[in-house]
Length: 415
Image (tube, rainbow, N blue to C red):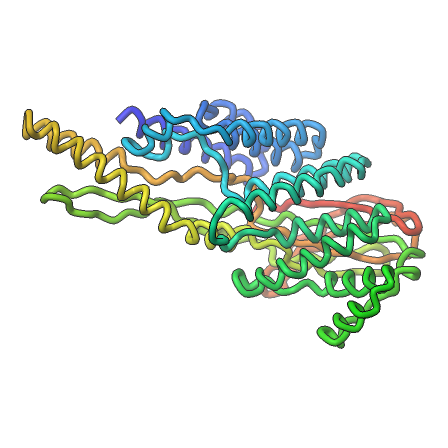
């Protein structure tokens, strides 16, 4: 019973912190997360602090928290045998939280956006390379590939950063990887292939003198309109990442199995998507505007990724049921009533692990807007509901963009 209280009790405390976060009470959220911290949830505490500081614009503090999360991830590569054994006897709350695969990847876009906002593009490129290493690690993790084995948004953002720094080869490599990933995203998650990526592939292929690729892409997308690289470099560009809505949450489901007339529960988690008020945004700079494109449906990826691991989660639950059955059987040989009581305790302790990174957005969107270089007194993001009704106009402040340069911005909605 103690293990049950520690696991679900910590989750209840963290979810009170998440409620504060989504009400915009960021200081309160941080304080409540600190109250909920325990040795099994170090990773979540670091990830959540990273997002909260990022949302508030405390960028260096955010990257410090994310660096702590990365250090914990490396440490957790060495598994604690005693924790694993306890997880087979009690529940998965006995294990330190190691993060979902997509959660591990999304650390890097957050850090890259922080560095870009700090005016440190070199450090953002370091995150692009770290992102590649993380994705290779995930691809090598499973003998058969899981649904989530590549990240289209992270690859595309990496390509945008490389292009903004004049690395045409690096940009084209990541744009092509992003294209393959978006083709998979379209099949698995219903995420449309971004029009801006089509233009980027044509532009960078032409810039690299790869005429065969230009012809290939023009045949695939005959209606794509794009500006040649040399002309594009005479312009400025705004890139805005919209981090939109509340993260999906895990909920518990269970089914019962009967072994020798004893009933044993198998608990497992499922993701539930939460609705985002905003469907899309429009970036307005001077007289020009462009609509955001969906880059990453976090809710869809979370749900599919967990379903992809369903058989492994259930197999572990069944193994735990067998272990508990043998334990109950042994006790019953000494005392039938104690054996029955133990079976009840075991059933109560069978809990699905509902921990996840709940300060993530429901989705990431992005917009790229090419403008003449100069100073723009008004840069705005207009948010719209699914039916097209306007929600709000966000003043992003005055910004200057130089010829051939890219200005990166981000904005988080909490509802």
